[in-house]
Image (cartoon, rainbow, N blue to C red; front, top):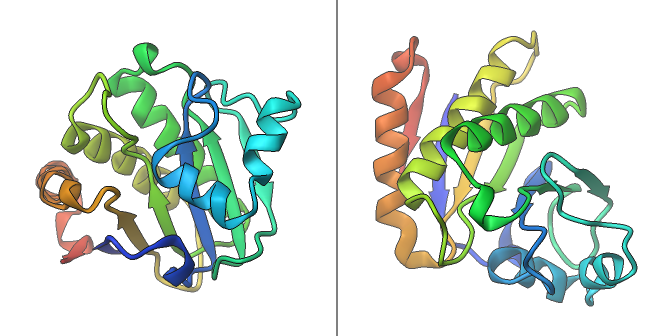
Length: 182
């Protein structure tokens, strides 16, 4: 399993899938999800305003995106910011992995750290969510290797995300199967 870190803008990402976590108490969406929303002409904001998308914990939304280079856009609800815990981040990662692997996605870009203020450091958010995501992918028999790109947005979170990835690799049962590319 290859894991990369990228701070490329959303329009430059070309993956089979783009997985973006967003909060229920952040309307309109900000940060990376806000950038995705802007690229899609406010579609996410309009669905949130109309009550179609809520952002409640483990809500899943699938779009066929336009104006971004990914084949499928997956939105994953994180619930309210103040309710975020390490276990919820692991659950979010497992849910992401289950949805992505069920859709046959092997090349995915993920954003799950959120914008400040967040109750957990971005390194913890990354390690917890990716451990759940990897756990979900590990149980699936597939023909293509899994390639995950962790999106560092804002770009200054890159070092913290790398700390989280290295912590994850150190704790992984099959650490040699995880390759981190900077």
